[in-house]
Image 1 (spheres, rainbow, N blue to C red):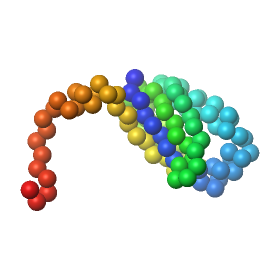
Image 2: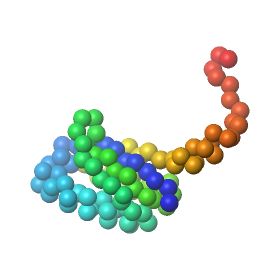
Image 3: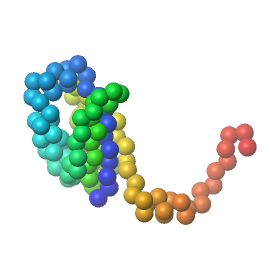
Image 4: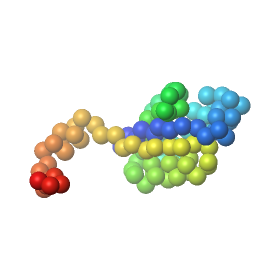
Length: 106
């Protein structure tokens, strides 16, 4: 199953929810979210700085990732970014491709 990384920050509303409910409750919500789109939460980490969390999940496809991200983003409590992850083997296959490209001005 493809892996995705989700990073983001809580809005003031979302931050108040974390303070009220705690971190473990949020992890359970995200586990349920991932299962509802056919996936599985691999890890959930809280952080500070530009991002308040980093999530790694196994999801069946881009549509499942987009469905989850849309639900999260439309809540108004989170500013979320979705990043598809590639395995080293996938990068090996990518490196063997020969795309046709010309740099601007070249």
